Length: 432
Ligand code: UDX
Image 1 (cartoon, protein in one colour):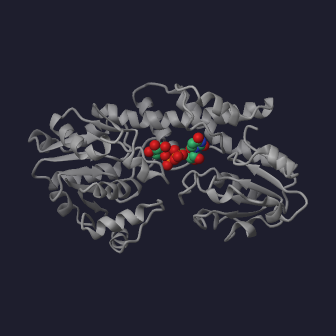
Image 2 (cartoon, rainbow, N blue to C red):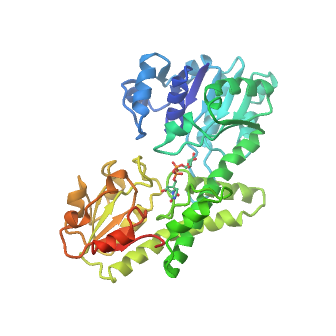
Image 3 (cartoon, rainbow, N blue to C red):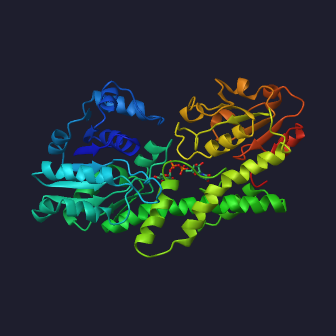
């Protein structure tokens, strides 16, 4: 099939590349000329393991092209995916849909034969109705169907999540659009996935409800970890024991320093905003947002205790600063408020992250990026394992730190407290 991805950010680029790898002809459009030039030269603007190789293979086979010419791309395609950003509006909880509606207004002038218009970007419930209203003339002439097809891609695992999704959700009442999209996804759903056709608003709701639930699950185990610390229980045992119950499931029950990223924080706030618009209160999701934002300060208080409130000139090492491993994404990473706080306390902060130096820390005093683990850890007073990159899973801290007192704050519970204590390392975990 001939597909057009509007927006070559995280969702549009990964989905476009993967669709082309299924044999479709895909044109990816972006108004950012520089980004399109880089992509035409095989330079990938995002950090996603495995993406470059698939992109180059399909680009070479001419199944995948990049352009700034929206009119030509849309005219030559049957299915149009809207994959533009839907950031949270400043000083508000609501999703900013100006880029989505700008695309809709452009499509209004371009479309002259039947197309399926798909919102792949995460958009609040009723957005499809609003797009359809903008394209009302085309709808009346039966030249479009507006469909919701949310993505469930995790950064760092996006290709796997695309090719082996737990489900494909298609929100439309149009039998014609549903038939076409079922055949588009056939190579994927025939493996194991379930293909679920529901209403458009239903599909929009499933996306937000899923992310808000995952955020709730993480915040739940994070708060339980606080109780485990007080009661001498290891939260990893609790996660394991709970996860054996099929109704609970073992995944997304790892206690940590607070969830981050571009999705959970944005989507939980947008869902609360939608509920407010419909005069409904989502008290649980509200408490999750509050709990998660407070958690970062809870953990810096713990650092204060570990350092016995003696911050001045203490060297603190952060191993990993990204919001999760296998990405370079710093959006809402819990390391940012923590490092800001510690810098203000006149600590000397070093950090190492496999994805490289971070712009966000260049403006903060007393913060230095180290090119490797050894230089980051040498003579450090406290090592904080913030992100569970594989690089940090088998370290010899005694050898790295070269000090009598080695102190570790393992915010991802990578290491065994027993083994660390046997090595006379002062070890602190989360919920242990
Ligand atoms: C998420 C959803 O998983 C994905 O389906 C959706 O399409 C986009 O948002 P992503 O934000 O890329 O994906 O990362 P994810 O792996 O979900 O982790 C989000 C945050 O939760 C990270 O900060 C991670 O460290 C944290 N997390 C995750 C935990 O603290 N504990 C867990 O058990 C799992």
